[in-house]
Image (cartoon, rainbow, N blue to C red; front, side, top):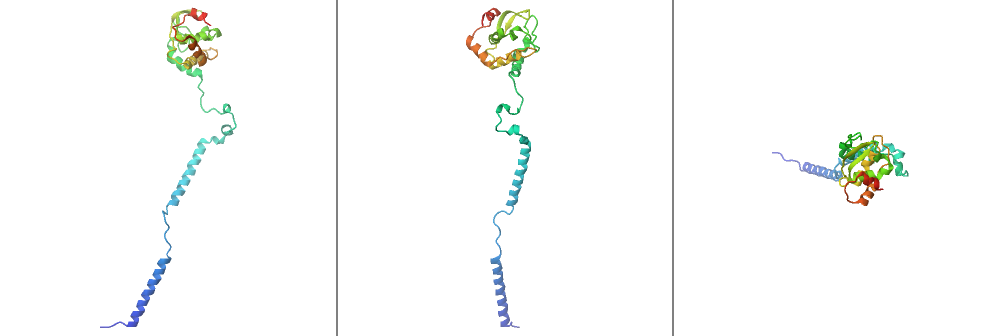
Length: 214
């Protein structure tokens, strides 16, 4: 049985101790790991790139090339470029006419011979002295005989005052006075409202009553 040399054991122990010291120093000097998620900067960069891309697309579609006629803050509103179709009172009146008047007076405005008088070329539609009369007829209706363009008619006109608003009556009369070759000034809602307020609730007119009224 052999025994180890005491001096060799001492040298081996010293070497182990030195290695441990070196390892300890290396561990102490080892840089610490960065805190947080290392992928976060890449995510932030991706978000910024996406924002720039969508911002460029938005400007391309909605900037109108920064036209001075659109983005001129000193330009008056009346001179601004139109952005959509203009709906006129006559256009709105056509809808009212189609829904309420076309059955009798026809889409051509010629009416039905011997039954319903024409509106195209009618003196009650065009002549200035009948401007209030036509409003009264639509508001309160008309009964009895009437002569239009030299032809006689004897029927009843439906009163629309309880069905249509002042603006609707003004619009339909404006349409009638500007359609089928007719050319007469527009009727305003204020004109209709004034006649409604003047006569209140009453029955249908006759031609004789209309001609006596202003």
